[in-house]
Length: 143
Image (cartoon, rainbow, N blue to C red):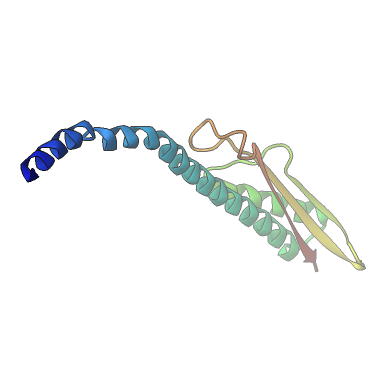
């Protein structure tokens, strides 16, 4: 009797031999989409950080440079371009620098630098989830 039970279990194991490979083949595309999405999202965060750094550098450059508003604006624009170039990015026409009165403190001037760049992602196909433009604004009081 014990021989019959052992003999019966072997064909059952043979029928399930390829089940793991089929399950892996079904799950692999889902896992790959998740991994590629994580890579794309991480790259977007890295580029977003360089955009915020460029805006902060531009505002700081305007705040510490001497001269009139045009000189301060020029210094800010050069600092933004240099910071973005270090990351392999460039500013679109939407990047602006303004020297105006500070909000809430009309006695001082503030430099407001807005950096906007186009973003397409490392791996195409995630345009529905990731933004196509990255924007950051930094403000610094000009002395």
